[in-house]
Image (cartoon, rainbow, N blue to C red; front, side, top):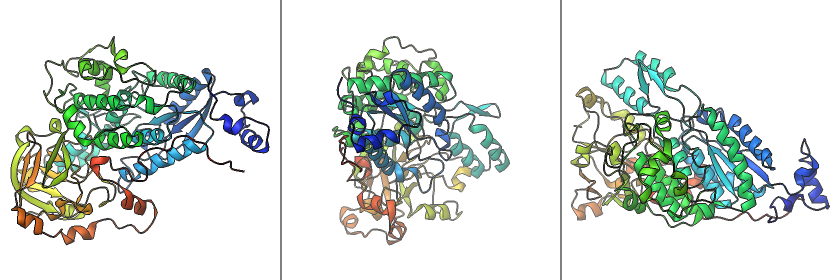
Length: 571
């Protein structure tokens, strides 16, 4: 057995080791310090992160498993960021949460860690932090909520918020009925039940190899989640004994497998920035273009909102993640391992599909080519992304005049103006919403449609933005335009009336403006007035150091890792 990292605190008979042991002797017996692995449970439970509020219960089952395997479980509350609550956007604090998690794992006498997350940014932050310290680690996802219904119809979290709110604006649904649906949408504990970012990242954590095989996608109220949590606690001790670390599990092959799964699942575009950021912590070569070259030819097999009809508990009932992966087994890297030490592909042997409406056969997909398309052009020199599976097919090749908004506030002020010069052929352009400009790259890219177009029956149009959109959202939306306007990107030079050309088949996004005129244009001064200019604190540090979407929007000083080296003594 290799030496325990925690022994650097607890072994010995000097004053410092006495201090470290004595202050932990509040119920721990003497043999807790005899070489047993000390396992932190990095817990993002918080009443202000409602999708993670049940994780304290999950943590107790994890602790029971650690005890059973002979380890010492240690609850470690970490920064929790709830997508639905914090302003201006949870993405602003993903990197901060990852940094705090990394530092606490490195600073404390622990040998391994179980990572408890659910809501959108918590699993990415946990994986980023764990990757940078590279202690043995395993993810325990909190799982999706059960399906709620309204007027006898299933409700998809997020997706139906966007749909129903547009119907109110169109005059086809009363405000009172809209409010009635509010209490029906969130039926149980757990994160969003659509294939939004939380579901996507929970599932992809397993494809990356970082969860107990078979656990991702288990609904939060399902008793089998607590059983899996117990087994995950046992596995955490085994990981420490085997010295199996995230850097050995999350290889380039693992990330390419995640891209294949992202396409087959119809997963969130936000996975692009999260996977790039995690890979950047590990030093794994992964680029934005890998999402296109590896994923664009993969068929969409899962019929889930927002790209389809069903919801996450339907996916679990139909066979779950492994049944989906079995359909695309030949596209997976067979050498990529999981936290069990065995290849991911080895865990798919008995996977079966129990509902072919939810999980389609490879030969009969929802769409033959899914995944993420990466666009380039004079509007996106460093790229932009679009999710064809969530878009209107007839808009994937489009030419129309720009209607430009210099900020979110400008959008809200003018969008429903009856005098706004906009038609269904127009292209809505919103800038100032990137990592630096907002700050934090919020989920505002799926702009509402102008009220007068909704009244005419229009339900989709081309939209272009340097921000993100919720994984629960849908529509023909070009996202993550890089460089963003606030970083000097060409989106700052677009003017209302410019012809915007979207050609997804040829991976192009351009403003049809004469080259000489385009080069001579000055950035919009009105947009510049709205860019973030924080004077202090995390926001200032973030704006000064954050990278662009095409590299994962991580802070430059956080890319890479520092390992788990124990620092100087504290006394």
